[in-house]
Length: 579
Image 1 (cartoon, rainbow, N blue to C red):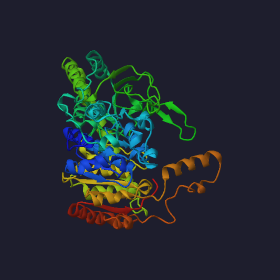
Image 2 (image 1 turned 180 degrees about the vertical axis):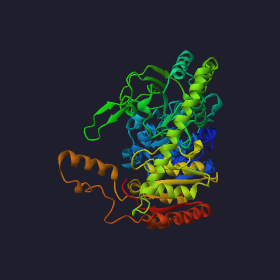
Image 3 (image 1 turned 180 degrees about the horizontal axis):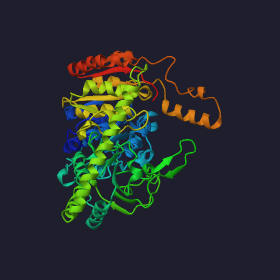
Image 4 (image 1 turned 90 degrees about the horizontal axis):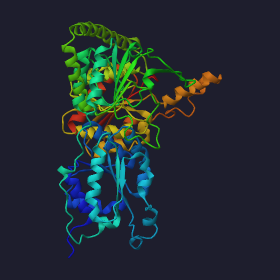
């Protein structure tokens, strides 16, 4: 007996069981069965976000997961769609973000393949193309294997350190009628394990070292991936008056906190460094010569180092994102979600028995507060120093955006305007910012995913959008209009790929060649793209280009009014100086 149910319906059953919220995709024939099941059997209860490129589909899922900690699904079309989105998958891996990528293949049963197209869209083992930078991949060979494959992929993806997974569904399995009911497992019994606590004796030793130190410093990279850790890290820092340097892979620590000394030279003064979820521990400890590429240590001789995190877990055999090997005095494999509170408890027990240390800590706090205030004053002076520049300076643009949004419940997506937003804005809650940007050609997609995660919350999502990045996929603006994803885009438009332009200047100086020719192959100009015009043509609000800082505020207010009223994207093209 054949049930009136298809293999692709089972995939939808599993997506429902795991409460997948959205599906981003660029249409493809190899998953036409799944597409039909999502729309008709699934009643489009997991709404589709229609994308103009597979890379954007994966980036939206990347941004969504960074913003809310929950995964959505990105679907890509067979071999060609998978190859299109390789870079986006790699960046999700580097960012340790849970993204479930679903693909499809022409029928592995060759008797069911259409001539030409199904053969070209089929690989022997499709996951080989991205296996080096996903946590796990699978390609089930019958419909009965679908539930287990999906459940295992979800658990692997959501177990720390998190990361992308890939599931490939055979087109014939999707489109075949079921001859029996396929049971759906109890997903509550298949969830990820509890966090790794870390060895208690090692954590107690870390507490003893931390309390004993005279000038301890905390370095943090991605601790804020768990919103609870944003507050627990602040409580630990306050207990011991330990300054924090935030590397912004996530938002880990309040920017206006008196102990936030990001941007200072405090690392060079430390006698003990506590590293929390820092992927590159060597980099912050050294000075780099940008021309010769040589490094020298800047930390004090004898400085002790404690590292807590997942540095060697899920280490790649292919990508060298594990960075330079750094000697460490105490290395603890643990999830900071639970390790930080436990470390704080141990520190409290030690301080109860040491009144002298408590007095020392009080005095230390006052000194760090003065340093924090001096940093803030210097950054505000930078705003004033080039106030009337045309094009605008980056500090002026960051200041103008802040004046307009500071009374809103706001979220900043990926780009921080060369850290000027972090210096001038008050990032007081963990959801304000999901962490710093990835490479070029990632930010408009990730930002759209962040905006999707906050859709319906009433929050104003702001994307400071580099021009070179947007040129990779101007069509992504259409997604915000079509799927009504509200977001304010403020262009960081220096009309150049200036990061590389700077490299050419360095090489020219080293070799004695003409610095004035560094622009060749670097400018996004002559003619300058009309970003506002493109935005309007795709159904969004667009204004600009704006060169004068006095005009930014009124334009942003008009754009925000559009975002709130229409629930779509609004773009304001602001032209800036290079640095």
